[in-house]
Length: 198
Image (cartoon, rainbow, N blue to C red; front, side, top):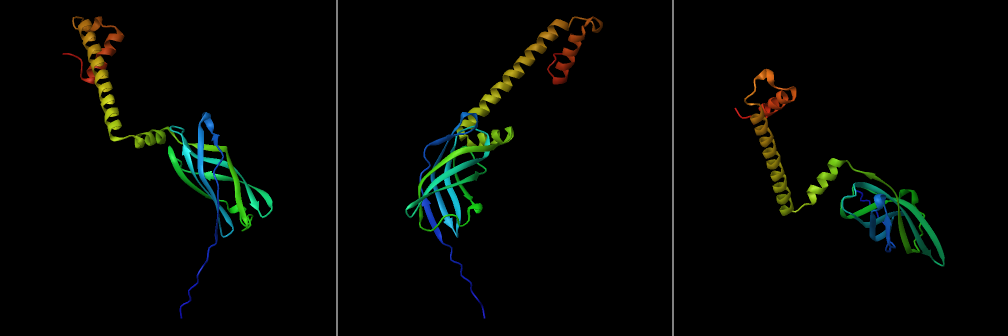
């Protein structure tokens, strides 16, 4: 005989908009919208959209959330910290389970207001920032960037050839013993690059 156990999960949705924006590090302004508190089996789950400004370098941030709940005829302040991880530039859908607040919100409560303020954040490395920027580029932007890099490389090579040509003209009629240390080093550098004229 097989026994089937069924679990019923009660979900109570408390929806409300975050009031305004909040300031993060570097004077960046973050926007949190579509904030909800879903109570799943007595545990609040904070969900929201976080708009992360371009080039902030933040990988995760912590928000202090303060909400006012109407519970029957009484009002109750419910405050907690929400962790928002792996945020990218642009809009991020976030969700954080507030396990420490288990069974603190009664079934008859509904959300009157909710506000967020910045607590702290963690920054990503320069390499990850560069990769994020590269990932955000369109095909035409990548082509333009590659062409600019190629042009810069060609200009650098042209300048090196010109310097080595000048060194050759200045030293070609000198005997080796007449060369200065700086001229000798410049000749060796140009020879190493393969651009010292014979």
